[in-house]
Length: 121
Image 1 (tube, rainbow, N blue to C red):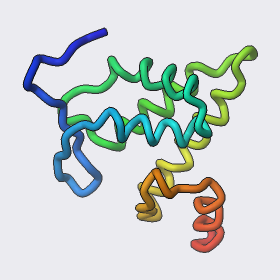
Image 2 (cartoon, helix red, strand yellow):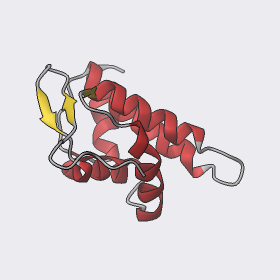
Image 3 (cartoon, rainbow, N blue to C red):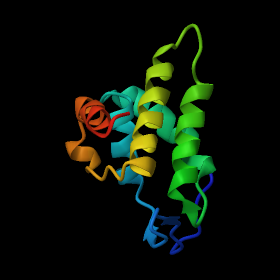
């Protein structure tokens, strides 16, 4: 595993352009939502993403990495990754296009579907 230089934290560029300190806990919560609260899948995906995170990564790029990494894990033995990639992609679409700003902690899959119906998706 690559270790960051002590005292140097990665920054994430948010959609509005501001920089925010990278929070592994925040990313894990988002991934956990995508994995439907599976700690095992969350740990696997988070570990696979670890090397793909760099300083000043744009949040859109980070989500693209989450989606791509989950999609690359899809196989006949592990079709569950298809659902994980779909949930991550759906969340990205709503955040990018419909300004859906619910926190991950309060986010429910049905809420996203209802929001889509409401805006005519």
